[in-house]
Image (cartoon, rainbow, N blue to C red; front, side):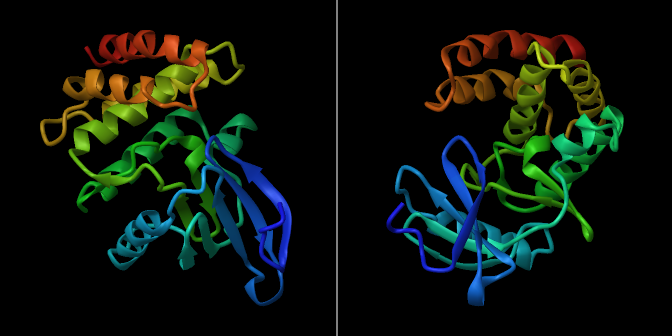
Length: 219
């Protein structure tokens, strides 16, 4: 990529809509997150900075311009990686996600993609990453989306599917209550999820079944 800034090192990871590079030189200890579609990182950076001021665990933002977001480089595995090797139990993973959602929802923001792959277990504690889909909205929708993402994993052929189902059960139990009920928002979350252009056809077809699983477990 000819436009990668001078001082950019190795490609660290590739998500559905962005690539993450190590930075060197004066930016050592930071990463560059670049939107592949050339979108504007400004809204994501503003939300992250607001959350940081409120004490919510997000990476520190250095600067944002166009599709490029430069921010703190985090050390540690994701919650997904830690669960895969048995360092975190499914019950603990579900409880951790529920706690992060509860903390987030005292702010105006919702994440809409908060799943184990977007939680880094840093030495200072869990940190939530990838805020591109974040916006203001009802907490119930955010909670339903996190449940839906776990339900999709639980129904997949992946070896972590049983763990995802157990984590989902704990998440729903910890999110129980009348302050932001999950089940009424499952249809809206499913519609939003199915509209994601990054989903494959099989993933899109699995959304409805995942929604049914949430309703069954919550019932």
